[in-house]
Length: 103
Image 1: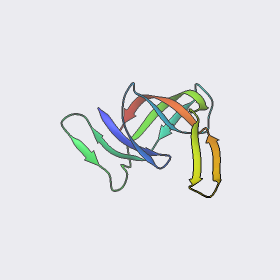
Image 2: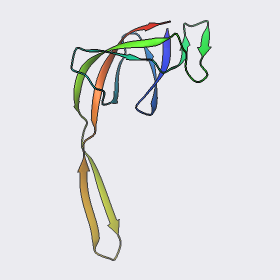
Image 3: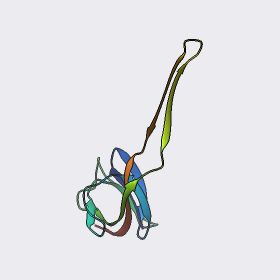
């Protein structure tokens, strides 16, 4: 069984036991978090699609890690003008393990 959930402005296809990296969520390591914006579920034979979300379905996950991602370099440059700006950014993320899909 799998589901498509929406969190942090993005959509993720998840199944029980999967680990996914999502935008930072509130909570400590070991806390449970529930995703109630479920767009689609499927058990292999039957597919349910919400309009826009399924009301009675939710996905329960366990927070396994809160951290910062790898650094990305933001480099602005204009040729022949002597304009260069170099900046780095590390995005915060939460690693969650999907526990169960109910509904």
